[in-house]
Amino acid sequence: MNKVVWLLAVLVLTYFASTGFKSTRVVVATSTAAKAAPKEKRFAKLDVYEQLNLAQSGLQKSVFEYAMRGWQKTDTTKSVISIVDLSQPSTKKRLYVVDLASKKLLFNTYVSHGRNSGDLVPNQFSNTNSSFQSSLGFYQTLNTYMGKHGLSLQLKGLEKGFNDNVYNRNIVLHGADYVCEAFIRKTGRLGRSQGCPAVPYELSKPIIEAVKGGTCLFVYSPDPNYLNQSTFLTNALASL
Image (cartoon, rainbow, N blue to C red; front, side):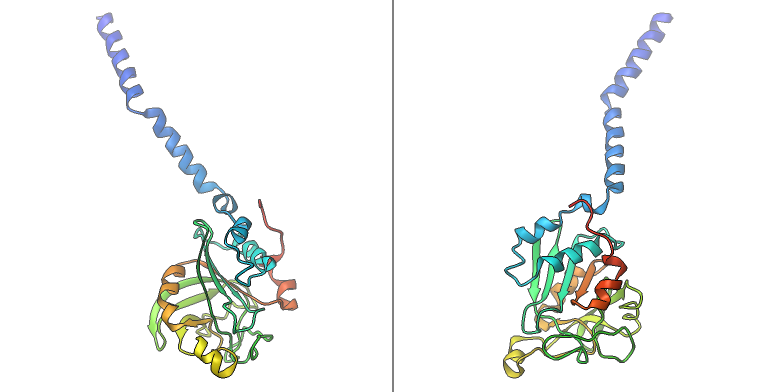
C-alpha cells in the first residue's frame, strides 16, 4: 500500500513538472512587469529624432524635446504623436506624425492655423470661444464623425487655460481644400481656419485614421506665456 502511495506521489510531481507550471508563473510575472513599466522605458524617444532625420524636415530638436516631455505626462499608452510646429510659416510642411515605437515618420505635411492668429506665421493664441485663433499645448485625440468637412476628429485639450476649451469651441482635426500648394502659389500662404488644425483634404482620412482614439497632439509656438506656464513642460525628460 505504501509503495502505491509513493508511486502516485511521484506521478503527480512528474505531471506538474511536465505541464509548464513554472513557465506559466514566469509569463504572468513578465506581463505584470511590462504593464507596470514606465512609458519612457517602453518606447524610444530622442533617438527617433536623429534616426528619422527630422531636422532635415524642418523640425527643431528643441521642439521635439518639448513634445516628448509633455507626451510622457499624457495618459496614453499609444506610441503615435502628432506635432504641429507653428514656429514655422504655413508655407512649410509643419505637421509631423511620428510612430515612436516603430520609429516611422507617418506623415509630414501642411497644416493650417487660426485666421486671427496671424498671417504667414501665427503669433496670437487663444482658448476662448469665437476667437478664431489656434490654441497651444497638448491634446488627446477622441472620436471621429462626419461633418461639413467630411471625416473629422474631435480633440480634447489637456492644458487648463491654454486649450481646455477646444472641445466646446468645436476645434477639430479636418481636411480643407485651402490647405494645399495651389493656395500657397496664389496667396503666398495657406488658407486659415477658425482655429482648427486643418490638413490637406486628400490626406485627411489616412491622417485621422492613424491618430484617432487617444493619441497625443502637440501644438507648439515659442510663445513665452505658454512656455513659462505649461505644467507639461516643467520637468526635464526622464530616462533618455
